[in-house]
Each structure stands twice: as C-alpha cells, then as structure tokens.
Length: 202
Image 1 (cartoon, rainbow, N blue to C red):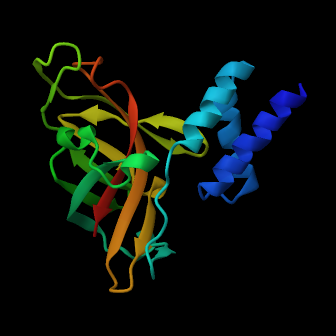
Image 2: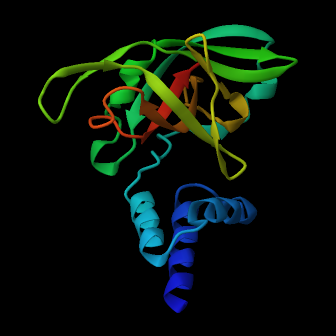
C-alpha cells in the first residue's frame, strides 16, 4: 500500500513538472490515468510520462489567453505534428503525414475550434518493408482531466480551441499547441496509437 501511495505521489510530481500547476486538475488527471490499474501497470504509466517531453518555452516566450481576442470568422493556419519523446524533440511525427499542412481556426458564437483536413498517408511496414497506405482512424485530446474523442466527418476533424495553449514570442508571433493521441486505420503494426504535439501558427 505504501508503495502504491509513493507511485501516486510520483505521478503527481510528474504532472506538476509537465506544467499542470492546479492541484484539482492534477487529481482529476491522476484519477483518469490510474482507474482500474494494478501496481505494475501504474508504474508503466509513470514511466511513460517520465519519458515524455513537454517542450519548454523559448527565450522570451510567454503563455497568453488569445481566444477572446480573436475576431469572429475563419482563418487559415499552418500546422505540424511533432514527436514528444525526449530523444527526438522537435522531429516531425509520422502522424504529420496524415493531415494537410494548412488547417482552419474558426471562431463563432456556436463555438471555437481548430479544423484539420485528413489526407491519405504512406509508410513502410516494419514487418516486410512493404509500402502501406492508410488514414486517420481516431484522434483524442484531453479536456477536464478526461480523454475526448474528436469527431471525424467528411474528412475533417475538429479540436476545441479551449483545450489548446497559446504562446507569443518576442517578435509577437503567436502559436497554439495541444497534445493529441492518434491511430491510423491501416498498418497498426507500424503505427499503433501514439501521442504527438500538434502546433499551429496564427
């Protein structure tokens, strides 16, 4: 029991290091992560989060609240999906191939969202080297301490702007960032469900 409590404390410390400062938000996230896990699986969750890098802000960058300042309407933005593991920080994720490079930021009275356009992706099988084709099967994001599944409709997928973090550099350039978990419909052997960091530039 003491070992289990120590693991929970370690997970709380890990979440705090990754930028989740609010205690209640950390507690909600922990409840989602450990629900139904035994000690061995809990340790695996902690290890996986310790091996995941949340990129630090660059020199002069600051976190901002931009949603309320955006004009209503639709705006084209460039996107990229990056790997999140420490040894590969800022390398493009294979999931980047699964989306058009331009997306749309929409702000309306009925909601605010980032709309991505799906495209067919190609990758070599790790089993036999054969070229395989597929497309996005699912995209998840975290909201309120729970993983939400984004709806895919007519080749489009929407992510609420409220789950994104926004930053501004010293030159005034603004970008948004949100971790997403994705899976491809074909080739599960070479692209299982994985996490990437989605960035878009306003």
